[in-house]
Image 1 (cartoon, rainbow, N blue to C red):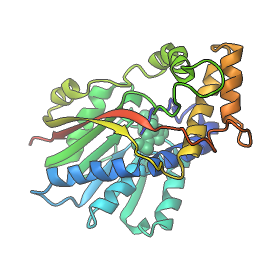
Image 2 (tube, rainbow, N blue to C red; image 1 turned 120 degrees about the vertical axis):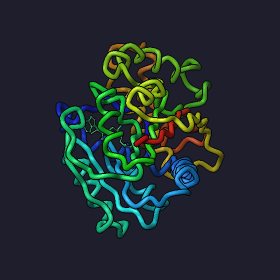
Image 3 (cartoon, helix red, strand yellow; image 1 turned 90 degrees about the vertical axis):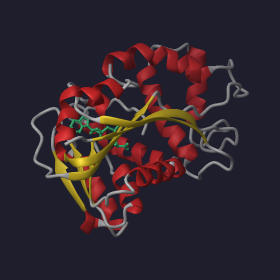
Length: 285
Ligand SMILES: C[S@@+](CC[C@H](N)C(=O)[O-])C[C@H]1O[C@@H](n2cnc3c(N)ncnc32)[C@H](O)[C@@H]1O
């Protein structure tokens, strides 16, 4: 999942929007999630996966992908946001897996509840939210049964959606938007895009693989792509107020205008391009 700066504690009003964004992301990146859980199934082939722990689960995009893949497993979804967990429970009922999911509201920056020996820990876009990731990884190590696996998924940035030349305004709008936001992001989430390898080793894990994924979705793009792009660029637009030229801002507004001729909801030149790295690390007794 992409990186959305949303501490649940101070941005509660933002959560319905975040929930929508996370769900759209899971829909658009469905094939990638399937590939990723397939890889984890290979890495865990020697021991059954019965209990999975999704750290910073949000709306459960990882939880549900894991339950699809590991049909005998139950999941514990942990998040600090009760609203996102409530959303997750509703989704679990819709998907018919409510009896396989337990939600736990917890601040993973504080002392962790006892999760009691899990086989697989999944942390997607979550570790960089921790104020002390070293501590969180030690806790994750303690939560795993010996020989259990942790998958840490980290994304460099939110996906790219726009072609360089949009046919309106100056080319390169999306790159300028990102450049204008870079400082702000670095300040809000200093661990975003971190190399988790050294921290995993320090926490006692044996790293089995560090795998980069380059995602460039083939056409036809998933049906939800326009809505996902609109949600993500709309979020960017809010953060960009006062940081972009008036011309760029008006082009961005035209892209976000649901009914307008340039709207991302109707364009046929969108792309979905992003990169992420996944560390698979084994707990050692
Ligand atoms: C970028 S979202 C990722 C959600 C989900 N893992 C996904 O990939 O779709 C980060 C999640 O971490 C949660 N989170 C942030 N800080 C947290 C903390 N200290 N304790 C527990 N959860 C936290 C947020 O509420 C949010 O749901």
